[in-house]
Image (cartoon, rainbow, N blue to C red):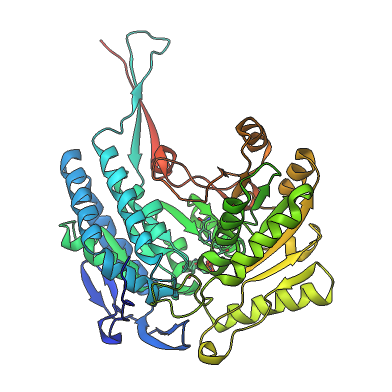
Length: 492
Ligand code: TXE
């Protein structure tokens, strides 16, 4: 960890052009977005925004590059992805700083996003010359019956602002390893690290156009989803947007995999190590990325017999967390993404208070003083929250968590599963027999026992219910970007 605060990059060094066919370009429509730095509310840079014309050029360029990419031997594609992983590793410090400019994630965590992307790229590189199809015997016993996995061609990857490098690992790396080209559409709120990543793909020797990076808002996203040259869409973002995307994708019957929001439960049992359970609940809850994570443990369920002891430890950790300049390596909590997010989250807090959805025991306000120009909110905790209330049912996507109590396992599981989401669940207990039994009864795509949600390339990640469809990561994540063909040969 660096000791001296990492310094912000000079604004004129931030990448702002569309990256299409290996060149940086201005938006054909002249559309731009003034990127605001969340830590001070001031413009970072003016970024080109892709429109339909740019998207069409990006898709056509990707199709041409994909034909070249798939003509390479598996070993050559593998080696190029390893070179890309090496390039990302060498660029970790710069990517870490760009990530702070993107969405003000503290520099303490930011390089970790680049390191995670590198792990996924390296993991999927290893699949390229090993992933294969299969053959199975059929009724005419001398026939050769092959089951093959083929790329879609051009895949559209739509990324949220709160972890573009993570989505590049989960989505772009798998899509490339599966033999596709990618049109990556980052959020207008986090364009810098994706654009830098696109440049690293070129530096690693990948064909220009294999990865085109076209920041834009809904307009460019809609054009991408509707483009007839797109074989598959991988969307990471909110549920509301997913509905819009699925409707648009129906236009061409384009398949879509989705990684959506969550309202994940964190179950703290009486036999848990309360210090580590409190630390995990604090960081996985209101502190990590200021709660702006799909994996946020935003509902903390605590067994009654240890409630007071746990809450004392938990609130002490929440209230002691250093908040401030995300470029300061001592800072754990940064701002939320925008003024709009600030207003939305404060409205959620005020409504919860006035409508009695729970008791506010800490936080609830915007921070002033030297932080007044940024979008800083106090980590906020409500206790005795009614699980039927909007506070417990709607994703807040901010530094706000709900505490609930339970007596026994069945009650905890019923509370945890009583949600329209199903992305993650967390279990704190020393009794691993209990942990495994409870994990099997939780409706969630990922269950973390006595640990936080550290993603690993070997594991599939994705949600049950309204938290998404399909999986990213692991072998399942590779298969998401392949289509299956059966070839059957009659032998003479
Ligand atoms: O999402 P938005 P945000 C979820 C997280 C939260 C959301 C926050 O839970 O719900 O993402 O990210 C583009 N057609 N996850 O605010 O607004 C938009 O430009 C096509 C879950 O960014 O849905 C952006 O690039 N595209 C995840 C992207 O969609 C459109 C982990 C997401 O925007 C569009 C991280 C349209 N009509 C965050 N409208 C997980 N499960 O792993 C917008 N976009």
